[in-house]
Image (cartoon, rainbow, N blue to C red; front, side):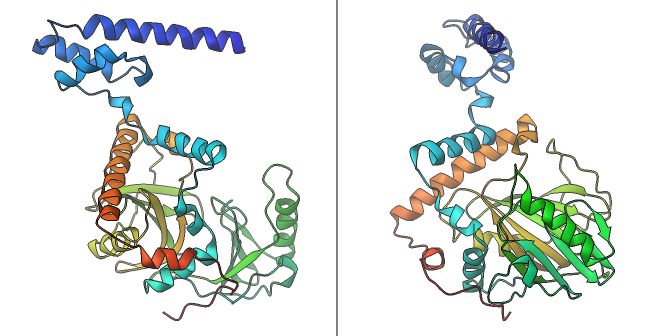
Length: 345
């Protein structure tokens, strides 16, 4: 299989290189018809198949190597930088619940009320009106909303459990999983509902250092459905599933709030996840430095996300050179011993 894969990749590289050489040629690239043909090729080929001499012609003709800017590729690069070069993006510090809460508290952004300390699962009092969640997990895995003693919603699976014993059995499996084990450390938060009495929907803001590009709205129960809105509240296609046909949308006030928070984080990108209470109010959920299933975005969206990353990176550099201190962020990530305090907002 390895040899076959190597052969296929080599064949793809050679084919792409030949296509570039045959369409991007000195003396003919200035012709509009030739440019159009060359651009079609450059929309498709992997960027590593473009040799330097041809790149100079591409630049002179003002053509674009569309896949040369890619959010997908940036996510892989950041993973490699972290795991193998020990280059740590500071935004990951906000991935820790207590640090993220400390940060948004300093910015007076409402979050769910929480007890001061984490608990083991056996210490939890399963009373109605709370949500329990692992301190470190993704995709709502291990999150349970206790609506009533006989109505407990397994958020990840979209199932209603009718007793605490059923929750105990599910948690036992999660704690003993050999592939994605979760730690026996749990947050207890207030249960958030919207103006209709339903579980508050997720609004996930794709934020690039002071700019929201688009928002994903998610309805998790009884079945997972989602849709996407641009920053102006217009539905958009991203390549990811968008089956939610009764979305509530977003407001300019929401965009403004998230952009102010994003501008205080010295990183090109972080998804800021919130809960929607009504048309005018959102509550902080968590920071997500790397969104799941980023490979599902279509090529146009992947390019757009990559462009916004690079633009945000440039804005951060300029602000840093101008002396911006990121005080709220630095204070939040500073080491300390105290536990998470309940929100008073």
